[in-house]
Image (cartoon, one colour):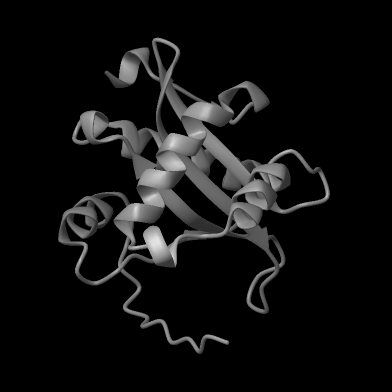
Length: 153
């Protein structure tokens, strides 16, 4: 499939297909029902992709005019590098697209854009219980061994 797959920036016309994937991604991480993201967060996230002042970007994987996956990434400053660091915040593919190279193509698309922006690295996190994703990630990147801590307010 990857030879027929197009990785490109999200376009405004993609909203409905993007939204279905976005909702699937959030449901996967337990953000649905009572714990769902507010519509305002979804609207703001979508708007940020089209705001040139925002460091938030989105790629989609398209095949036969169907959006099969999404990748959201953010550029930010770092105290250890001069160029911007790229954080791959969200990666999700439709159930039907899994195992067909869509995730790899999206990650490669983020890698390409990070290199063009002068970023020395791309990093991301996933839940330790997401063994399927971790097996895949071990093939496309190095596990840095860092553990994430957070405090919610």
